[in-house]
Image 1 (cartoon, rainbow, N blue to C red):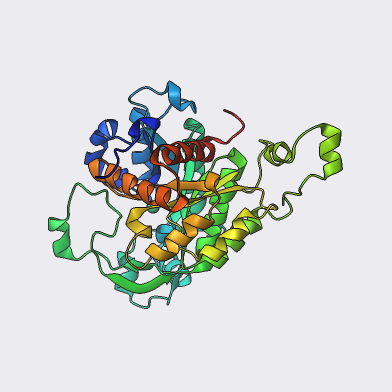
Image 2 (tube, protein in one colour):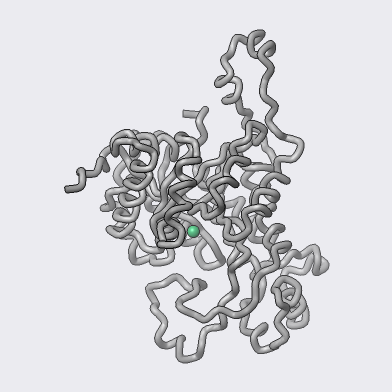
Length: 378
Ligand SMILES: [Zn+2]
């Protein structure tokens, strides 16, 4: 028999998408998980995430003070899968909308291979100006002072879906938030990494200015993802305090490392690599003493324990420091399954880390609290 699960300690989903299935939100207050970190990804879900945060958002960073309706930590961001739907106004003379010709040239520029089928291009959404999105995101973050930035990132393998077929319109599942893939076939077109990097970097800068944690997606782009993150903290690398300096100030090495200042920076204070799928050996660069952001690594059953990924995932879990591991469901529907997936991944992490379930759930809870809210303010 499997041991009973210590839900009462508090389980936190570090990354999920329940606004993709709005009808499932009603199930959130009855879930065994204490709170969900809910990602926005595209045009259609930013306001939905704000709406669920109005109803079920947490109101303070003190978990023990939360009421039973405080269940959601909103997170606002633009996912790399949708990066092609945004254009940089600077390249179009500050225009806020693109005419047909400009739309064609935008999509030819950001998609690779460049599409030459005009019907395909005109079936794509009219691209929106990136600065408008950034301004809206800033407003959301200011309105929700405990909100995070996400989901953002880089994805080299993603190809954009074909437009929906006509008959699909009548048969589509209306309970799904529009804009997702919905079983569409994929086109051969990837989104240029250069364009993805522009979108990612601006969101990292915004998170840095407002001192918010970020949740980052990286698929088949782990090297360039690290380089893009590192570029945001160039010149801000952490220098270990000398022994003499510590002695003069009467603080321990740990206290010295923990000293943070809360002034705006170009890089986010805390980063979660969500459903980490890179090589275990690529993780050490994130934990180098010079990295001024605190990096957390999150694992899910949905992504990390597909047959192919399981053994490297277990290696990665071993490599991540005990105080930097997070768990997530990454599911698109809230409720019982989300609880099941969370329990499953927690059991796996506890097994690998050789923690008892009680110890593990407690550690994962404090890791999530430090990731979401920062260590010093509590
Ligand atoms: Zn996600």
